[in-house]
Image (cartoon, rainbow, N blue to C red):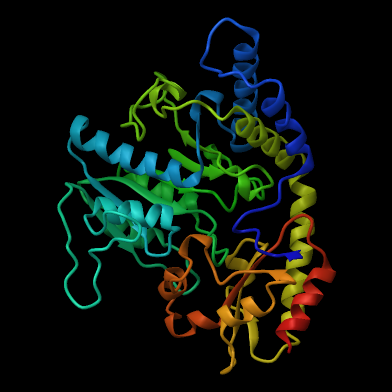
Length: 395
């Protein structure tokens, strides 16, 4: 099968798998245990991986907290910051995000805003008012422009004296649209508002430096850049006293500085560290390859009638291409099913299966939502893969 759905997940690099296997077979100790060698070896492996992940983001090891992935990281950061601020730090209880975020951010903010209790909230209704509750927090969802980008002006308009946090995606998982996180951070910090960046689709593929972006929090997942699933991290900016306090998402043991309880998945953490090491080593080479393939795909699309990528190159990250097939007889779900034995692509986020894309709707394209497919490339993709897709799109 030709795999072109890498924004959903990427294949595990062989070097990553080789690094992980000893921690499943021989070095299976719990890093929170004491004295014996298997525990010490596991603990050292975790700290070595932490240093590699920190290097990927220009952070210190102290600032990296391992989680199960970006969704958990975003939940921990957004809920943790708002809860601590409300009850222990002046009562600020307002978060700002956009209407084109990944569901990991969007639904956290909707939950805090009292709009939902779960991700498939049974109280939601198309025919009556939704059962909104008061959880004591407020969320504002600002609109993006036609390219899926948040403006600093709209952020500034949304900030109030109760705002404690702004949270935005760096590279959009459906369109590849790039937010100017550094500019948004500048605006937020001018009002003493903290900022969280969801860098899931950028990490390991393009430079992500927490100092250059001037961010306070970051969330990322290993499986988007050839690492294992089930492991990610949160970056929490340290001050001269160490990590600032936030409310823990998972209460229990004192792992990860008391912020994230639970036995560490050493094999996954080692894999994450190896993926980060490889990403730094090969970033320039891989980025050049992805850019060449992206340009090749865009050129080939121009040969097809009523088919185009609709986010201009200057507004998106290479490797994620949203394609509009504006034919009356085209339906993206039926097309993807028809080619599914040969090629893996998607209609959008893997976290929104069965739903119209809220991201595409946010761009003002709700009437075209069933005519859009997403192609996302990896370092193993080839021009022949793209030629096969173009051939199928042309039929």
